[in-house]
Image 1 (tube, rainbow, N blue to C red):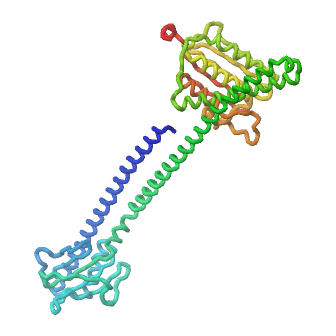
Image 2 (cartoon, one colour):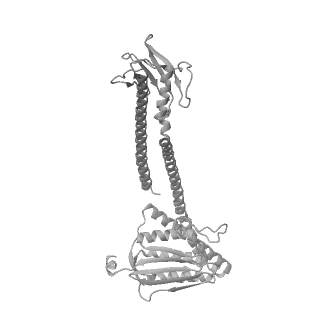
Image 3 (spheres, rainbow, N blue to C red):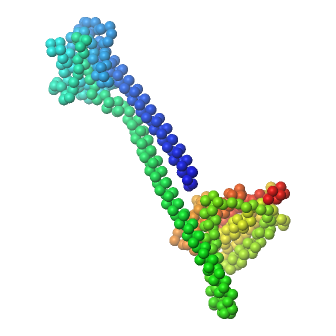
Length: 433
């Protein structure tokens, strides 16, 4: 994953998180305000109902205004202008709260004219019909109102807990959101750490492959000198060893070059040098070399191409490389005696090139990942085919750079075919080239 992509992901993620957290915070605050307003309204309705019933029992009139005064968020004073019986007040309070579905604890006090203070009445629980008066709750204080004469005060000490209880769904979703944010932050840390490790690994591989170039060149020169020596040439065993050294050099150099090419592609320094070429001149040497390798394994290679020039506008080096990789893959994975077929046809201004083998085939679940870097089809504990999983990745990158289409067609037990679709070059393209 590129540096710019990671920055975009982090930036968009941070914006999204701030947006979601802001919306969630607004939702929580709005829900709290609605529940708080609902609580205050229900409490005032309940207290007004109590005052009205007390006035009716005392055959007195209620004040015309300011019957229920909210002194704080959980403390209310009710003006009755008539005497108040504590037992009756407690009963009526419980009845009114139940009627309004306001299941909450409360404590009350009645103003005492003789002492000019609030006489504590008791603490009533929502789930207990009636509780004996055990005196004031520790730390509880219900302040009086100097402007009134006959009144009582009611305090709801569990108001905050009651509102939070009604917001259980909101709290649950908020916890899920917090966990999601934590998971996102943790994921970003892991991604950045993995990217740093991947960068270190990639830098190590690039340095290592570059360091291989000098000894490989020395090995090639030494192998050429040994092979040209008359004494070595006259000894069949030494000549075979000299050829073996050169063949292994070619194999290792090919892998190193492939790694270097892919490194250039990923660094962005990769450039396609398009030229006007004829596939009929480029392909035969590759087919001859592939046929020789196939026949060494008692297999055979056939090809069928249009009997006409096939003009293409492409990078000849990379085109030769991808054709070599396709043929090499077909030989490697074509079974013990590979039967390779190369078929080309021209249709609607495009060359359709198919490279087929009759090997074991590829399962459908692996076909979509065939062009991934370092991916190799799992074969259990058997590793009879050597490689790094870079060949088809390189082929796919070159095809993308040329805007060509490549796809795989395979069935288990019936071989594999790689289809390459390349537009033919026109006269105008040839002139431009």
